[in-house]
Image (cartoon, rainbow, N blue to C red):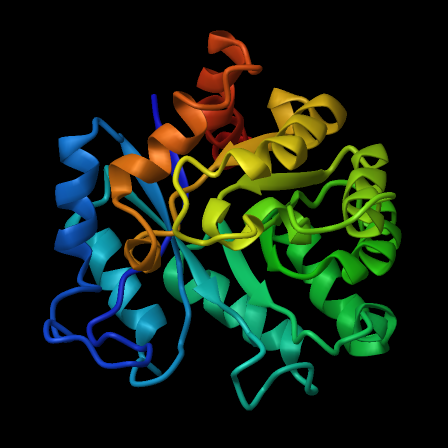
Length: 279
C-alpha cells in the first residue's frame, strides 16, 4: 500500500503569481487523477486555510465524504496564517475540529520567528494534552530551530506522534558541520518524532534540478537516524507542480534513493503511516 503523507486540495489556487486554471488546479479530482495514474492508494489532505480558502477544512471534509476510501483529513488548527494562532481557546478549537471532522490528525504551521515557548504556556499545554487525550497525530510545519522545544514537548507527551513536514527543516545547502541537520537528527532520540520524506525541491540547493541528488546526504542521514519506521513519503501535491510532476515526486525517492532497501522503501511509502493512522 502506498499512502501519500502530504497533499493539499483547494477550491481556489492560493499562490502568486496567478495561474490560468486557478479554479481547478488545486481541486481534489486533480490529486485523485495523479494517485490513480501512479497507483497511490490513499493520501492525507493537509489542510491550509490560506489566501482565498478560509473554508479549506470544510472543503477537505467534503472531499473525504465523497472519497472515504482514498483520503484522510488533517484539519488546519490555528496555523500561522490564522487570526487564532497561539491565542486563548486553542485546546477548545482543537477539540471542536476533531469532533466536527472526525479527525485522525491535524496540521499546525509554526511561524519562522516562533521560538516554541507557546508549547509550554498554559494554553499550549492544554492544546497538546487534548492532542494526547483524543489520540491525534500532530503534523507540524517547522524549521530546524524548532527542534529543541519539539524534543522537550515530545518527551512530555510520549503518546503523541509528531510528524515533521518536508525533512523537518534540514537543507542541502548547509556547510559543515551542518548545524541545521544536526538539530533535526538529534530529534531521533525521541521515539514519537517522525519525519516526512517530502519537499525535495525545498531541501535542494536548486529547486528544479531533478532528481535532487544533492539532497541525498540529508535523506541518508535521516534514514540512518530515524529508520524506516519513522519516515513517511509525501508528494506535496499540487504545490509540487511548481517544480516537478507527481510521478517525479515519487521517483525522486523510490528510484533515486538507491541506498534505501526495497523493504524499507515500502515502509516509508505507506507502512509507517498506515500504522500511525490505525493505532
